[in-house]
Structures are given as C-alpha cells and as structure tokens.
Image (cartoon, rainbow, N blue to C red):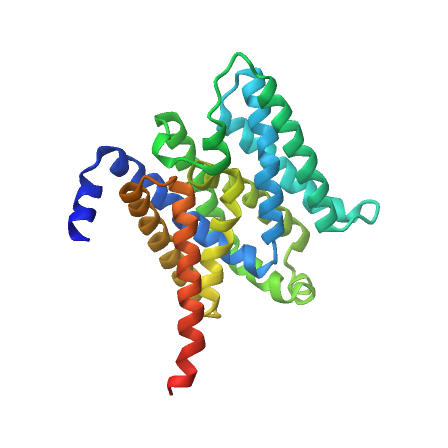
Length: 274
C-alpha cells in the first residue's frame, strides 16, 4: 500500500490533477451540506444534465466550454428556482422538464458539431487528469467565488432550511438567498463536471453530506465531517484510478459510496455493542 501511494505521488499526471481535485472536493463538500439541508438533490441531477446543452452550444459555436456551460447552468438553476411560482408547476416537474429538454438539445448539438472533436466520455463521466491550464484557472476562480459566498451566507441558508417563516420574520431576504443558493449550485455543478462528469455530478454533491449526516447535526460538525469524507473519498478514488486504470470520476464516486455504506453500517452496529 505504501509503495502504491509512493508511485501515485511520483506520477506527474496524478500530482498535477491533485490540487484541482482537492479543491473541488472541499467546494462540493461545503455545498453538499446545503443541498441536503434544502433537499435539492434532484436539482443537482437536473442542472448537471442540463449543462450538456451549454457544452453543446459552446462546441457548436467554437466557444470556451467551461465559461459557456457555467452561464447556462446558472441560468437553468435560477429558472428552476422561479418556475414553481409560475403556472403551478412543481419544482420536481420543472426540473424534469428542463433536464430532459436541455440534455436532448446538448446531444443534438454535440452530435452535429462535425468541425470540433469532443471528448464525450470525459464530459459524461469526467476526467480530472485531462484538465488544461485555462480550465484550472476557471476552476480556481469559481471555487474562490463559491467558498466566499458560502462563508457569507451559510448561516442564513441554514436558518432558512429549517424555519423559513421565522427567518423571513427576522428580516432575512429569504427569496433572494434562495436564488443565490440555486445559482451557486449551478456554479458548483460545473466544477464537478471535470471530476465526475455530467452523469455522476450528483454523487459529489450529495454523498459527502449524506456521510456526515450520520454522525453530526450542527452546521459546523456537518461541514467538517463532509469535508473530511469528500477529501478522503477523492484521494481514495484517485488512487484506485491510478492503480486499476479506472475512470477517475467513477472511482471517486464509488469511493464516496463505500464511505457512506461503511459509515451507515458502523453507526447501525454501534448501539448494539454498548
């Protein structure tokens, strides 16, 4: 095992991807707590799949992939936040509609983009090993923005998640804060696309907090635990990817799933041993 870790750290490809992967792990762990608290798991699925349309537009027009996909994902997330107020459409129905329509549009645009070579497997399932210098810069900018907003608004979001009426009565701008949260979910989805791809992004935004929720309840406890699980799962996944030549995104999500199962089993067995 020590020899494997030494080989992993000596690989220039793996070490080059380590910093962006760890940064994504910290950001997604932080956002994961709010996704779980506000019950936005299906939103992450919808926005991540809808981002394929943004990538398709970028490919068709020969524009930078991540900036265009970022704008599209944020727009979709904000539209989902506003849609339930229009025509009586529920949030889950609106998510399903935009999810299916945007993904269909993305598939059509990418399939007809004959002038540009597209790594469709990388878009769908992620490949942090192929991240370019420009993409790294974009990831660092998005990460800094998301973490800054999390520090400023996390307490307010936490209050809204459990008692929105009291939060609004205390003077918090509940609707504006919800729009901000949805927009940041859209930004975080784009971070996840490089690591886990469109298909597996929801795993990065749900599993860390799901693991943490087994052990903690306060905001501070959940954030610390979620970050620990996310960073640990990402490291394990990347090592598995290196050792067995598995896709990096799938390996990370599989490692997080394993941590959740182990946490749940340990928590279930513990009371019977007292």
